[in-house]
Amino acid sequence: MTEIPPKAPAIAWLYGLAGLSPFAAASVGMFIAEGELQYISQTAMLVYSGLILSFLGGARWGLEIRREPLRGLVISLSMLPTLAAFALLFLPIAPRFQYLGLAAAFLLQWVWDVVSKDSPVWYPALRTVLTLGVTAALVAAAIWLSDSWWACRVRRLTRRGSGPAGHRSPGPGRCQWTGRGR
Image 1 (cartoon, rainbow, N blue to C red):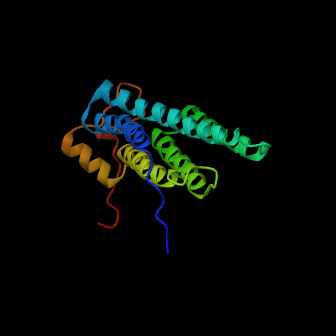
Image 2: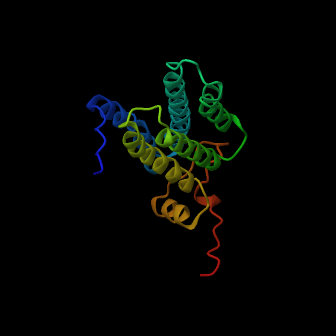
Image 3: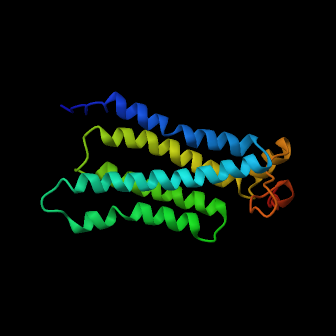
């Protein structure tokens, strides 16, 4: 008979879901705001993503330091989310690739958390829901900042997408989608 794992404590769900609210707020800001507020929303999502990814690495570190003896490989690997976030935030790449890179890093951390035997039995379910929310926001942001047909169409319809002067965000005039094959 298959045993159902225990539910995550309510406080873990409460804070976990509350932690998704900055992703939701930044997404709304990106999609409906214009100019400086849109740029602030984009930046907020990137920075908050880096903070949360770093937090997850720290959680992994915290699980490991309880062990005797410490596993050096696990301690080393728990530093990777922080280093990945730092690199993605400061490498001179287009923002859409920053969002996609962060989404990939969250998914890799999720895989580690789900297959790990070190975390509580309820942790994979919590991390799955939260990772779905985070990666959905990051991928939507990447699509919004792309020159895809969908993003260009939405920006034309809403007349949104212009960032402040010098910002790399594609504005309505930057859409280069040719509709190849249509």
